[in-house]
Image 1 (cartoon, rainbow over the protein chains, first blue to last red):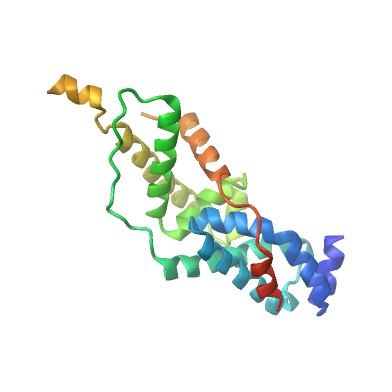
Image 2 (cartoon, each protein chain N blue to C red):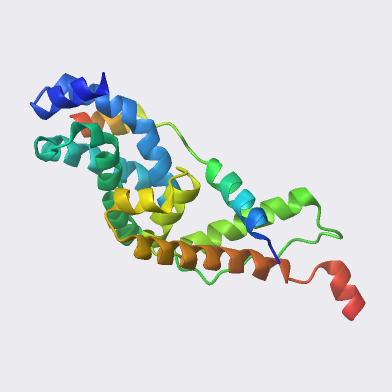
Length: 185
Length: 32
């Protein structure tokens, strides 16, 4: 079904391409948002991807690879948007609000907040690998093939991304709570 | 210290949050 649509779209059928775009749009947005952590930038990246896909579709040789090809276009659009947005680095750090004991729920919120802050500090290339592996569930070999980079590069990017995010969480865990401050006073 | 499985669990839960639906506005603009 999709292969037939891709072949028609590749031959210039606008309706076929619109069907493909509608089917892929939600998935593309989900990936772009998770790389960029900004809805406006993610929407721009998806729009650019679809415009470019229509233009470049005649050059797609293997129609079975349409989804992977589209995701690669999306990742490059995300790189461009990331560099345009450039809003990662921040030295602002929120201190935890008064909290006698840290509940699991509180820790989960803090972890997510720290993951978000840590992630925004990563270069977009590391973000993409992290999202493809942890969100899309691709193996590292599959990530390398999809992104068109060597396996060693994928491993290295994932390693640095993971270390940065783990450090962000662990730095938060080391922040003193009220009770520990009382003990040390 | 977070373990690997703790980290993977947190990362997966965190990545699961977020928009999953592309607005018609964006789709229409791309297909114009």
